Amino acid sequence: MTTGFRARVLVAEDEEFTLNLLREVLEGANFQVEAVKSVAEAIERVASFDPHAVVTDLNFGVAGPSGADLLQFIEKEHPWVGKVVLTSHASPALAIPNGVAVPEGVTYLVKSELGAISDLVGAVEDSISHSSTHHARPEMENDRIVISSTQGEILLLLAEGYTNAAIARKRGTSLRATETLVQRTFASLGIKSDEDFNPRVLAVRMWQQGKVVVK
Image 1: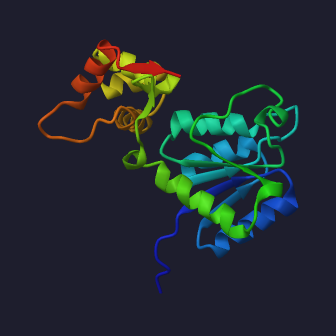
Image 2 (image 1 turned 60 degrees about the horizontal axis):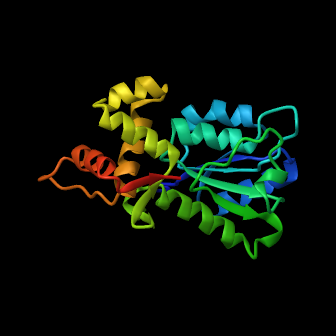
């Protein structure tokens, strides 16, 4: 008997009771769940589990890497994966001892403010769907399109004529991750797929014309 497709969610939480609770809640919502108690273990499991989303706490103690380190790893190596923070701290600065920033586009949930289990389930579902470039919308500031620093780096490399494979080598990331970041950059610029136009040329032209600003 087939059970149909289930999206895969990797959960990282060092408090065992909370970890087991999250596993039960997400499995009850028909997700396939891999639950781990450390950032190192989560990073180790990413390649084999190939999650659609990651749910992580931020504070794993002062000695080891934080949830922000995990999210930065995901953003660099697997940018198509949805990212959800579930923490007790309203401010990331209070939960991240080593000062690593939380990547842009992360869904941030405070445990005490969750109204219902469905809030967490909905956040995971949204993080998966919003990882698609089809949901991106150009963000404007003073008539210029705002892109992230990572997208700015991608745009500069495109302007220098690098292929996706060359960009992947220069940035030390996989080709799949690079392709996703390039498509995200196009989407943030409002460039849609069109067989009559080359998106790379359009993106570089927008940059040369001063229509783009990096956050």
